[in-house]
Length: 279
Image (tube, rainbow, N blue to C red):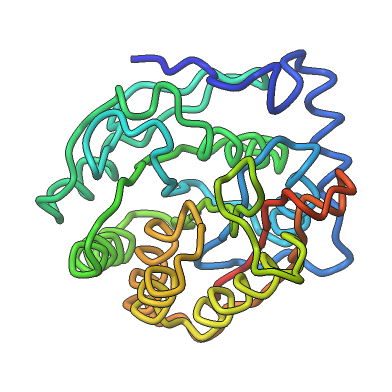
């Protein structure tokens, strides 16, 4: 099965030469590349969150396999939807799925279901593949999109992923995709009186980021639910933190944070973007 791009020409250029140049301009960092255990990266259009994603990926040492976890914005398909075979067609060339690792993840966790339909219109993982291709080299992916799960389900899936990654024949990097707080009339979430959407988003995102840098999956899950933080990928991020904890992670570093106001100039309707590396 071949998945076609969902947002080419909308979130990013669909002409290969223009796209490659666009992404390469965003891969900027003075830090050395690191063999990270996991990446947390946003998924808005390149003009909005691309600078955050680019700075994170510019610090990443490329791997042979990336296990991708993203939110299911469309609501289509299974709540833990794995695409286990085939390839993703992209403007920069096709990317194959690692069938062996995909089936190993499914075997390790009964929550996982094979479901290509859930991936058809989902953009969150597609936006990560762009940057992985720009890093260069051949690689394979295991794409999973997630609906709303209980914390216990996140814990079970994260443990299963850790087991699978530990037993893999080659290094695997986990990639979780999320945007942070969505605030403003467009998102039906208004800031408190006296605050801009930018200020409120930055405040609320600090609560979530502190749990991530503290490698605290349960804390992240509950602070998002209790404070009603509109972080679309908190489930993939929670699962990733569980997996990294099981794999022995010791640090999670915030590489960059910003809101869309830095691009649009609009402080009254914003989305927050955070990029982190877990080691």
